[in-house]
Length: 308
Image (tube, rainbow, N blue to C red; front, top):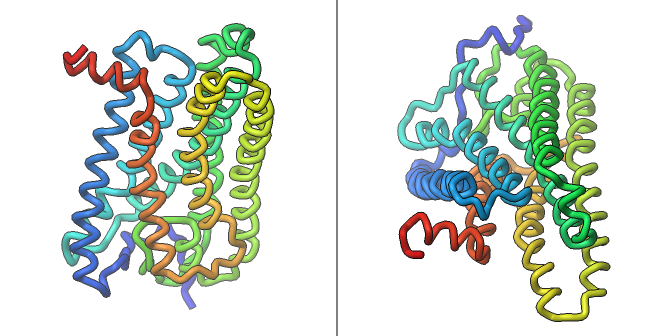
């Protein structure tokens, strides 16, 4: 049997939902609408946070980079998905697959860490309000953001190299909608137990450590909120954290269901819909979750539109 490295393939065939052409049409329309909303929503947050001086705070700095990550993630996957859903051509080039894998892993890894940084910011704001300006000055915030990006990209590089080194035996049909780690490992013609365990450990570390830090931060925040006597003060503190918590559970819930499985048992159709959830729906919902009840962001939007 001829064993080939993944890099020897000219391209891959993304099977997606090709067995269900009617479903493809529906998914194309739904995905296109969500992608447009994701572009508009995340771009609006970035623009508003840059042009309105009232939003030049650590919270909106982190939120701006969260929106930038969502834009990069969707740009790396959704256009190819729409192309595949629209017509019979379901192929993706080798370079496109590698790029899609690296960018999606990098943005996912970076977002994991950034959500933990945002939880830390909320902890300082609620539990140490008098020391907030000292503990979270602009220089420290930018250092945290830079470290988050660099760490996420480095982790993605390690994961991508591990996957790309897996030998194949002429297999180039990917029964999925994206180039992702679990489905690419299924193409291997050798035992991938070691690769799966290495990637599982990296994913577990990347997901569970920040998630644990988030839980610790919010347990401290909950204790601090319980000590606030005024209902207005409690509502303000909870309002600051509620949007972030919703985004955390959306992101980590889908990511853990996908990557924290040493031996994947999820059906392929279910995994495809799960990929649509965290790859298309979640990046679309994030900006709306953060802006619908945010008075500062809504005020900045009205100001830009000339209604204030």
